[in-house]
Amino acid sequence: MNTLTGTRHLARLILRRDRVLLPLWVLLLAALPMTYATSFFELFPTDADRAAYAAGTARNPSIVALLGPVYGDSVGALTAQRSGFLLVIIALASLLTVVRHTRTEEEAGRRELLGGTVLGRYAGLTAALLVTYAADLLLGLLTAAGLVSTGLPAAGSYAYGLSATLTGVVFATIGGLAAQLTETAGGARGIAIGVLGAAFGLRLLGDTATHDWPSWLSPLGWAPRVRPYEGERWWVLALPLVASVLIAAVAYPVSVRRDLGAGVLPPRLGPATAGQALSGSFGLAWRLHRGQILWWSVGFGLLGLILGGAAQAAGRSVEGNPQLEEIMARIGGASGLADAYLGATLSLAGLAAAGYGVQAALRMRAEETAGRAEPLLATGVHRSTWLLSHVAFALLGPVVVLAVTGFTTGLTYGLSVHDVPAELPRMVGAGLAQVPAAWVLTGIAVLLFGLLPRLASVAWAVLAVCVLLGQLGAVLKLDRWLLDLSPFNHTPQVLREHWNATPLYVLALVALLLALAGLTAFRRRDTPVT
View 1 (cartoon, helix red, strand yellow):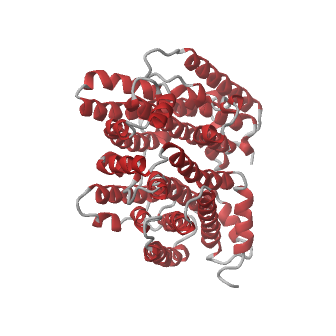
View 2 (cartoon, rainbow, N blue to C red; view 1 turned 30 degrees about the horizontal axis):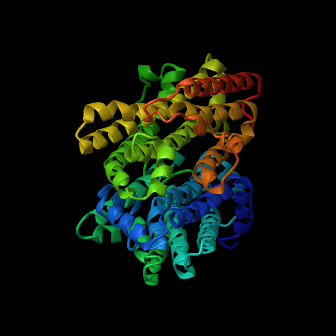
View 3 (cartoon, rainbow, N blue to C red; view 1 turned 90 degrees about the vertical axis):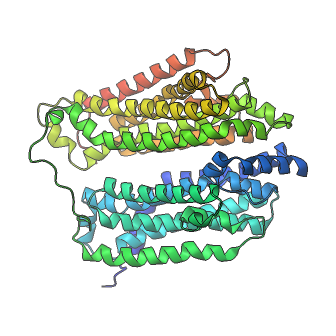
């Protein structure tokens, strides 16, 4: 039997299972650079406007740390820099896709069942990588085509598209290697995301330091150095290709030398007896969710430090351009361009925090399909108690994450304007104002889990639609009723001098009703539903 026997069938299975989620993140991430280019054409019609904006951006280390370096003042160069953080999202989506279809399948026991058929030993890893590589390639081609459609040069557009593709490819391969190292999907995700965080840190260090050599050590630092639209350096694209080959050369031998269900790294043994904290359903839920809350809080806290440090310069960078000032004020409030920038970025943080709520709520589905929920519910644990223990942390997580984001944003922004006592509570409040909208997404995930458990992952598609409406709605000039489908469109701009809190109460009530409906449906259905 060939070592790749069955790869094609496994790839078709992966495509069928991800027929909703995969196209969503590909199309969404491919569309965003095109909208950035369109905005730059409209907001900076003259060379002088673009040069002033590029100079202001290059002088601000916080913006450079978040988005990467800017190598010119053309619309293409500004678009490539503005799309810099998308590379992190592409990398994250790629590695999570590979882990989901390798280690998660193995942990759930489905890989063992498939292994009993005619299946080559390299088929599982190869199918996951090929599907993810194909998605990254499609994303890159669509991105390039979209940029060309805005009037940007084809060479620079395809240089950026290919750099985005290869960034996804190298992190997909890292995800494939991480899946071989531990025996749990959570551990594999932790290792891969840790590598992504280290790569971002190296890129940040190199881009903000005098010498940029640390950026050359980071897979996230290679794409900007292709320099799309500014004398493309095509040879840099060889770096992620070589890195992917080397990582795969390690991952494949490891995948067949370990036992099925085991990882290279030995699992850490827990205590022989459970502590008092695990005596109830809430204690167990805390044990399962605490790591995610911690790492999300750390990541968002660091992001808040960067966002707060960039706020004042972001406001100054658009001064003198009345068109941009008007748009920024409309997005984030009328109390100044810095407040507009902070309002817009904290809104994006709210969307990301909603991702935590969805992930935490869907942990119940993972526990159910893995067979861990049924034995627990066969004891004295009531269904309502078990579900509410998980929902409690799915609701608590966005509160903690957004409070931390607002705190660190307010701290750095307050230091930059020499008024920490005034800015700190304002930014914490602005962060917490995003919580009710994030709770609505959590409520939808709970409702789907209780009512249509097989479609629970559609909650991610709902979040993707909210991101799409928020990022592209104004650019595409969508009708107001369509934009209002996103709960985040109803969140008031609390950085304004006068704002109405009623929408926050309404959103919180909607989230509560959705969660209660999910609880009622879960109490009436069979467990498990596979």
